[in-house]
Length: 306
Length: 332
Image (cartoon, rainbow over all chains, first blue to last red; front, top):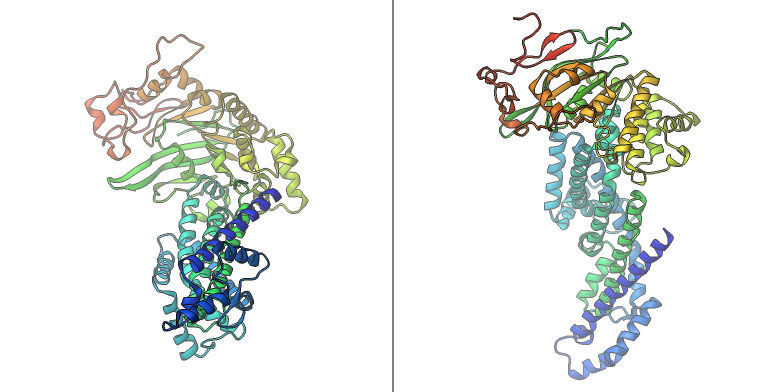
């Protein structure tokens, strides 16, 4: 188990390294941070000055070495929009994004698991159709639209929660739902289908034949066997959150997270800062996948120790 | 009808009457089990034998009031000591505690993600009501009863860590956990090595004698029936076609299908000449003939066989046959 874990961590570190290198290629080979950061009418002289200031007039190999050695000690370069270390700016915003993702994941799991079980229990009955309806609606609606809808109803009309910003737990509720509803919709359907299939399997039939109730069998026997897939899918949803939903929803709710920082960095043509944000988000995705692997290993002893 | 062994010690436990299970298909409703009638007395080992698709497994679950969707029980009754098992409240009490089932494939019939110990524990705790250290004590005792050495260690094992024979022993231990009066064993030895098959059969035989349990043995294997059962019923296309004490079934089979079954089994104790199979194939169940289901494969078929399925009639003491060519007792 420990050797397996060590191998997984080394593999994850390698993936982070490759991904960050790709980010470097995009920001330094395909584009020129100096040109991007300057107005269109800037002279060649201005650009040369900016290049020298950013150190990108040096050979690519040297720059790459700088980038990688900086990465190891957590130095992601200077933001020229904010005049501060990019890593500091990103890490300051990170807790807000993690809070948001945690809230959205809680919404996802706490809605999807019971809804999937209920739909499976009442297969082809009203509850099943109702859950299917919810899933279709939540999957089809774009998260930013759900976000605005929630703001209009719960913040503006009812006044229960603030419309935007990050002031304590209450302000976390709406953005968490805006992100989590679609994920919950997808996961509920997966859970339902998984349980319905598992209920026909011999071990579930055996449990029922021993006199365990349908609800006990669903919760204690089949859900466990669906859990591995459930965790994997939750990991995917987390990935989507880090790389897409949080960015959009942080803008909608003026949430001070990494996503909104990335958007501002793009608006201000601060490629170094964009690069830092992408590196951090990519790392989070890799860490998520690592945690999913560990969780699956704990749920199912048959998972290969490869 | 009488199903007692005639020695007076038996009590009628399970009475199934006209049980019919239907599965909707595109071509209409297919009857997996058709007007099944069957009785099991105490201390009795009854065999139900038939080929794949004859409805044996559907029957086993239906006796517990269970049918996999989209199938459903369309008629008939199942009584356990006089109580209606098709009533969910009664079923909840009877399942596991009074009637326990053993399934064909112990690899997939044990929960793959629970240890042997936790599967026994949940039964002993939730179905028997044991608590604390008594649970572990009884678990060890059960594993010991089914002949598993190193019981303490095996409690921590998962099904995939055990051999096929060992898994079936664990399966039997979970069936015995609630001290059932009747065990329904659905092909319990299929898929096991021949030597292991014999061990499992011997184990079931010994346990049923020691614990005074009745067994309903569902199998396609006449050898298993010969070795294990007191009485046998032959099933074809969801219906019982013959019922007889074990010796008479082998010495004097009556139904053409039973005859065919016996002739297709090699015997070492007797020289019967060549083995003969049964011509034709099991029917596509959606295209049932209105008459006797065996008629298309039967070498004794006559015109009258195609009109309606023959009823199961008594032809002698403890002998029942469903065939127009076997006159019932009392008729000319």
